[in-house]
Length: 438
Image (cartoon, rainbow, N blue to C red):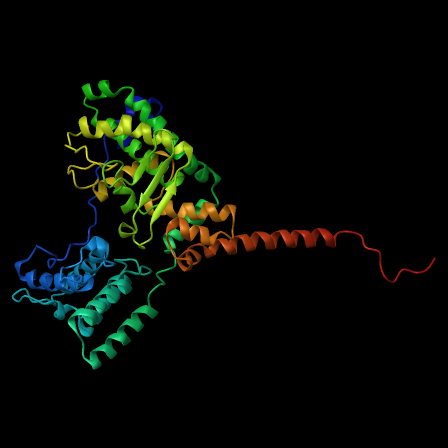
């Protein structure tokens, strides 16, 4: 369908395209929990209890004032993961009619050994039916978080604690290790390892996307006049993806959340572009990073032209001349949204990157870009696992679990080399030890 929209610029493809656009299938989406925050009035008590749990986790300062999320080890992101676990459990239980809509459940009604075990079994049933991935860690994470709420906030008897420990052990034994890379991602990175073309595409991605975007920007007024909004939007998506890849591969392989929320000016500036020296530095405080570690990175020189081009050609059009008339605000965020105090929405941010990745001939998510960084470092120096951990802000244990497969690949190659050497030596003539004397 995208090619049909661009058929005027793709004349050689016209004969291969259908006459009309193909109908789009309905997206299969799991229904959200009716007991999520703000949906059912009966859920108010449940979320009041949850807010009390969050407040207790963050604690109070010496004056009895609640500690803010930014200053606590229990960040907003951590709060969201626990809320998601609660939403998942209530959704599973509600779909089989195990939550009474005539009552207002409390957190203790969900976070107890019996109900947690029931939710875990319902998830396992869905996995056996093929409705969800059987090798995902979702079930284990849900049980771990609901169990923590039960132990930390709700309060359990000695008998209940013993039962909950048994449940957690059973779930942990039947779940994949969370440190290991998921099978689909592992298969993807192994395919990437065998494809020099994809590796070249990653290295050239910022310039590739910039060139294609520039080819559209040249005709910007014409395209606007002809109301070819999709082409203009494609140029902006390519520009956003170009600067995303420049930061990820030539600066710092930060997580998607940190990349999306980067301010490039103002009091909270994180992306600092020195005008005199030409240097670019990224500095993100530990409070905003998942692993609570400061990020300080210097960029490669060839990242600057891409970022400057984005700031002069792409970002102004996003704000002042959006193809679909969206009223984006010129905020301090590198990637603007319709609100001055918020960066670009998560799904929008990821969709722009997906457009760029496809244009570069690749297939990867923002998170897989981090895995590529680790792969490229270890390809150059197999012993640099500590460096990979530092660059990705991960523990060494996680990095070892993610990239252990590379040791097997290298061992196989080295083994083949030694076997070939042995085979060659076996064909060489050797003087026998039983030769007769002349």
